Length: 171
Image (cartoon, rainbow, N blue to C red; front, side, top):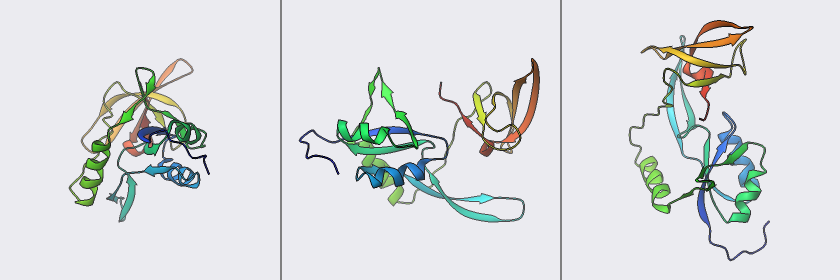
C-alpha cells in the first residue's frame, strides 16, 4: 500500500479513543502497517455469572512498527487520537521493551492491571445517565467502587460508580 521506503521502522505507541484498542488494531491492519496490541484474558464477575473476557493489557494504547510516513497514515485512523510523545517528539519504544512484553504474554504470567485511578483524578463517565460528563474522584473503596463528584448547575453531585464506568483522563 505504501511506496518502498528505506527509512528505518521503529516502534511507536499510539493513544486510542477509550475502548477502541481492538478497532484500532483492525483499522491499522487494513493499512498493512505492523501493529501490536498486547492482550490478556481475565475473568469478569457479574452478580449472576463469570465470563472470560479478552482485553488490552494497556488501556487506550496500541503499538506500531512503522516508518515516519506509516506512523502519519496510522494517525488518520478513526480510532487513533494521537502519537505518544516525549518532549514534543514521537516517543520511540525500544525493541527490547516490545519483546519483553511479548515474552511475558507468551509465558502466561500472572498479570494484574491497574489504571491507577486515585482520589483527585479527573475521569470521564462512559456509561449511564451521566455518560460523557467529567468529574473528580473523591473517594475509592476496596470493592472497586469509586465516588465521583460532578459539577452541574453550580452544584456538586456525587455518584457511586465502578471503575469500569469511567476512564482516567490524561493529564
